[in-house]
Length: 413
Image 1: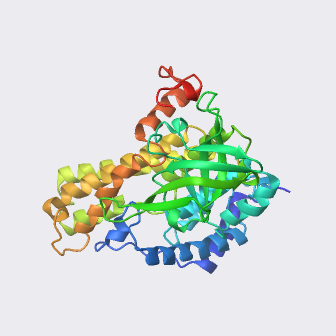
Image 2 (image 1 turned 135 degrees about the horizontal axis):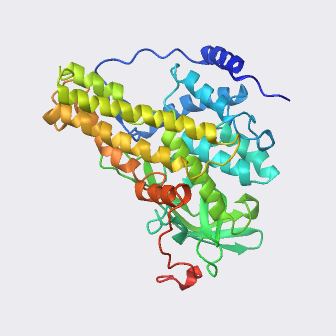
Image 3 (image 1 turned 45 degrees about the vertical axis):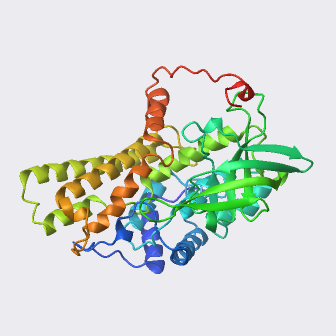
């Protein structure tokens, strides 16, 4: 069956969006709240649940109308359309008041669902991939550990076979939304006697399993978006293994590429934007200052360049293909833009950003400033992104490696 022409499909998308969403109203010139400007959500659990309910209602409507997983092949549960179709949907969606998404929704739909769709068995795709794409089930990502963040392949969480089950022991950290998730996509070491990347296996762990303990991490901004997850003798049936034993590193790389693409180009508002900074400059009557205008122009140009790069990377990707190292470009540009946006806003406001004077849209920027540094770490640090770009895009010589030995022979293991 031939694919719909992009221009005709655009009209169809616009008409459907108008049936489920209201058109976006022009942004207010002042008065943004802390929630508007937060990079990471800092909501009480009851408010977070209400937000999740709103997001899930939209995701289900989108899925049922045939607009979810647009570039994923049909045999994997997607729509089998091109990157151009996905770009068109994002453009049209931006004109509507989409419920503000959360990290957990993004991880469920854009990371875990895609990983299960690509690496899962037909039974797993039928049971879980569709449920994740539709957000009937929510899933978190159990990758990072206290001693294995940037060097994820050094993870120490172990999984040992026990009949038809695996028994998992270890600790994960920085897990967004774990307290609301039904499942977690987990990486564990199943073979310590091979090089560290080769001995890892992926599992889909029910978060209500005996032995799973979730502890919130209090952030400096006051919220607790992230969690530590402890796993003590957690039994997971082999039917919840994703991919072959030892294929976990391949699953991880594909999932992290999706994460970088989502981080660099997602629709969810993350912190303040150029328009918000411009509104601050106008409200403080600073927009006529030549130096301020220079800073605003620089910020605007960087935002346009990031958007153009996101579009170029998307169009260069084969329909349904896994994102490559180019996704690191959009992630790196997104984290840099967040930091610069906060810096310009802080320069404009001076002391107003350090103490609440009651002026609307000023002290609220602290949520952006306190959250932006974390975005340089989420989804892989800036340094890791630069390494990926240097080695895999620019084909520069790789860094010297001393860990090409069995994991059990490395110091501390």
